[in-house]
Image (tube, one colour):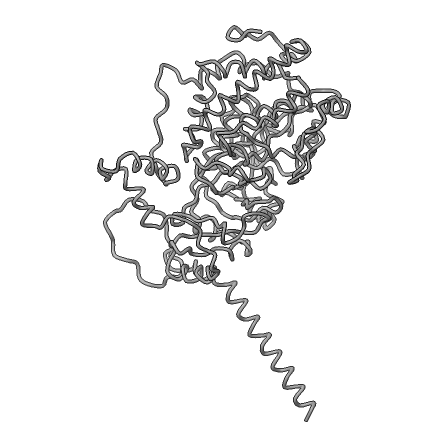
Amino acid sequence: MKMLLVRKFRVLILMVFLVACTMHIMIDLLPRLERRGPEGRPGCSCPPPAAAPPRAAAPRWPGKHTLRILQDFSAEPASNLSSQSREAAERAAGGGAGGGAGGGGAAAAAGRARRLIGPGAPRPPPPAGNAAPLAALFQHPLYRAALPPLADRDLLFNVNSDIRFNPRAAEQPEWQNEDHHEEFLPTGETSIDSYPNWLKFHIGINRYELYSRHNPAIEALLQDLVSQKITSVAMKSGGTQLKLIMTFQNYGQALFKPMKQTREQETPPDFFYFSDYERHNAEIAAFHLDRILDFRRVPPVAGRLVNMTREIRDVTRDKKLWRTFFISPANNICFYGECSYYCSTEHALCGKPDQIEGSLAAFLPDLSLAKRKTWRNPWRRSYHKRKKAEWEVDPDYCEEVKQTPPYDSGTRILDIMDMTVFDFLMGNMDRHHYETFEKFGNETFIIHLDNGRGFGKYSHDELSILVPLNQCCRIRKSTYLRLQLLAKEEYKLSLLMKESLLKDKIAPILYQPHLEAMDRRLRIVLKAVSDCIEKDGYDNVVENDFNTDVNTVTTER
């Protein structure tokens, strides 16, 4: 009798296990089943609706079956992120055309705030004048200085221009893995023009720059980041905040940082720099600032409006990401992913109703093809609430750095000064490490990656970012002359940035006070260099890096 009970108990346990397995399998199959409706309509077996009169383009809204699935994930009581309802978003889109004059200044300001993130919002016209200031800047002699002649050892890749990129190689299963996103199979005999723009960007990298000043592939790549179909999405491992790896139809990849703050929001004064939000518009603005400074060390970045349902949830194979989608009480699609900070229902990313802004940064070549070396920034902050870093308490810290490889020779210390100026203009305090391409050794530039914590405060200038420049009193002549040029009224930095950023699809990118803050910070940088020259002499501070004479009539020593 006892044995019989034991057997019955085992059978019961086995039955429960089988039922549980069946339920898990059905849950995993739900997202696939809902995509198999006729005529591409997810989860719907009903006949096609009758023809309706044409309407203005509206964000795609998931079917009822999809909503029912997503609502299962919104049971947590804290899932209500403050977000506009669909009706409010529609009013924002239509308010500019149909609104009367009775709203006053407050209504106009609210309209401008909504227009910052509204899909299809009109962008301001480019500045009037005989010639655009940005075009005039790039024609200036300081922006036409030639690089040293490039030998094979100065190129990241030595490419046979007669080899053809074969996209069919990307159809192999390995391509679905993010670690193999840039392998390709060379076949045929067509020219390098057949390569996708992301590959043209990669093969254009050399010892001195990520891309050349007038490389047409860069503008084409920026357009690809905005227009290419997204075929798969996965969460990026590591990092403190949510980032997504997006793969495109042409097999290129980009890093997506979603919008977390509106343009006019400042970092709260009680936030530590290491817990600040990463801003998508800061990544976009950093690329344009880097190009205006003629560093060309930030990979191409563009803004894009992404449909969270069709371009993220429906194409991801990352179950951890898929399971964090839900419907907010305001009837908006939301998700939060997995990361160290701000990945919870309280900090969910919500669309309007399922459209969300973000930045897309083009990937650098895969590490298996072009290894990069990671260096600890000598002026790294302590990342501690109470402790200070050594450079914050030792005024002679730079002398110690200059005796340590690779800062004891070559141009690395000057690269650090360039990066210091770049970060100070943005207000970026989060530069703990930097990377270089291993192939070029120590004689190469620093890649300016991960700029999302810039442009957080326009009302405050963080002078501690300039400590490397103040301690070392060294700067490239080319950098110094360009900074002087950008301080002149005809080449005013804020106006150049405003013009450059208007080209982005989600413009305006920066709130006007951020643009004005850059002019103010530029004057602070020039004053710091001037103080160093007065103390140590021009020749000891300004390093001549020009290979040939450059016409500098617009600037004076």
